[in-house]
Image 1 (cartoon, rainbow over the protein chains, first blue to last red):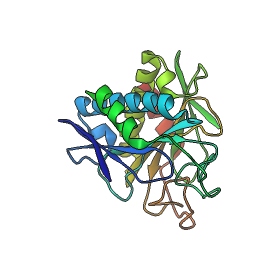
Image 2: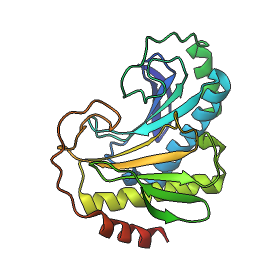
Image 3: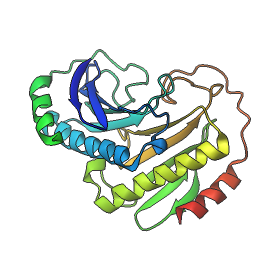
Image 4: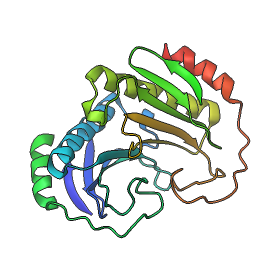
Length: 121
Length: 121
């Protein structure tokens, strides 16, 4: 786990994976997204938009994937991942069957986080 | 496939499954969500909010799941599902490994759609 960002409403962590993968949490524990305040919803949508655009620029992935499940951890959190044709699961979701041994060679994560922090201010 | 709703920006279809599952598409074919217009983004967020609230009321599920992948079909679409502890995959995402034969006995889908259409106006 790497703390990527925090503000009054949300915090963002890295999820360890062969693909670039961030998770956005609300500070307040809420079970369903529709139970979030308008401010929390906007903070999450804005963060997803900023992260998606930077992932597209920085990693040039085949596709961005976004999901919110919370079946095991019923605390609102969103996943956003950059997906590549030679990643471990493509074209399946990262929760699907493994397709291959990942052969990804990606740009370093730390400079991505530095850029992201500047855009999330 | 069942056409549930259409308006100027989006349309909504049923996805056949053991769980209540809808898919929201933009009419315009866009690959990534961040490429949508602000109006399209808001139409999708609003529809997700309305659908989630009605699924919680009508089906009383254990959890709502939301996802946007598009790895096979690179045209912006969002999945929203009501999940139950005895559904085929819980607590795994619907894209994960099957956990059991589903024993769900749910309220009829058509009255749900009728209610949903009234709220989406």
